[in-house]
Length: 142
Length: 444
Image 1 (tube, rainbow over the protein chains, first blue to last red):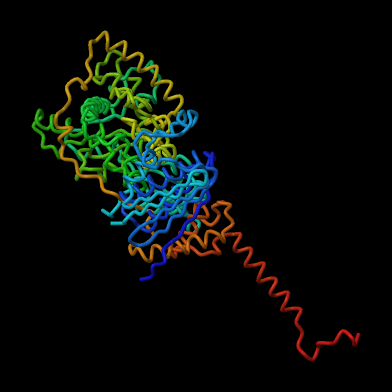
Image 2: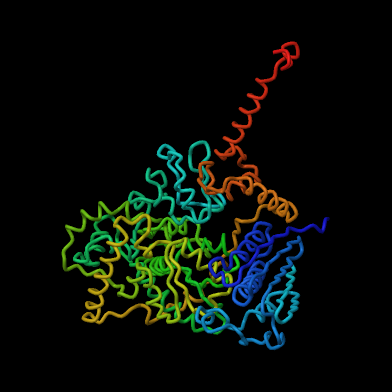
């Protein structure tokens, strides 16, 4: 068995709400095509959607990569943006630095990072203020 | 019976092989092959979009007819409330129901009464603490099937209560059988329906082993005869029992109103429903309590087997509802919803199972390989989504190619490219001369 997985990569543009969610839907479709269990697909979709939205809401630009293997899916999101000063604080439910106009649109409820941790099997976040944030999530397929 | 029964069928003689239906189908179940539309059975959800779309009337719904009443000792008509919207609100529901009694039915029982019972049960269900939010109404069978094939992860959001017509059929069959001393199987229970998906639900019930409905007759099929019959019915007939609450289910939003759901959304038309379910799947609507999803624009009155234009029907229905609300106040009529049928909630309903259609192969390694080939193939296709190949769009053609049911040259543009390349090759070959005839330019 080769460890060669399917790699999907999508560029993300900050503040581009028009195509928000497209990357996660494409990842979701591929997982459906290869026959991953529905409840796992749902977790991957929610996790990647939250990560995708974070880039669109907070960062200037970024990229979302999905590496799909028979037994797992790895999602990596890297952005160039303001970074997060206090990750522990940002991980708290309801904590958000999203400006009012974003909240008015129904985003920025402070559930993004907590949701990502909750639906993934492994979650890792690295951030440098003024540089950007990298998120990695692993979802086991069984 | 084959694995999947479908009420939506093709009349091949009428099909011209145009690609309109393929592009409208919400599950991409249709392909044009050998000049005719072919429905992929396991993808079809019987929503009837293709029936609506086909200008040649090649798509129809299999339906029972009034002749089938002869096979039963006692026949009960179960008119969907949409039936009432086919007529001007000056013709009372009592008269419409009276008309049905002259067509060979011994009794009428309104599906709207079933809707009242389901409303009450749903109200109770929504109070429970462990309800998965948003709860999705399971009254529209096309929506339930859409969830089975495209959103299997949302099955546990579906409200586990039977559709109004099933409740109505079960109650009326049992009560009449007992009262008239006729064996239940000798009673014909006939659903008069605007909906091919409900037609299918009769033959292949969702979440039950056997339907209590004997058959379904399209409203469009009995409309003519009923129209004639109505003129003979005395205006002062009294047959209506359902209140505005149940009758209102025919309109989009009627269900939400009857259920008295506050934090609720109403979504109609199958493509809109698909988009909203996509959002539910992403967890974006977790704070909504209840979503009424209906496959047809405007609700059941927009059903493909109804006769009247959906907007006209909506207008008539709204007028009618106002009238019966006033009348009910005078009559002191009470909705069935006041006393919920305990059986509805506890009824042993078979679980609704996923029927995923997206998977490319049983073997995950092969499926992954197919995804890769598909993506490469897609890049080579023109991306015009013209549908001339017989698949609804380029992506679907790429999928068909990888599954071996289509070839790249089915694409007119790819074919043209191949012809051009071949022609170029012929021109190049024609320019070549056998060595004895080849002359050096210097000799000229």
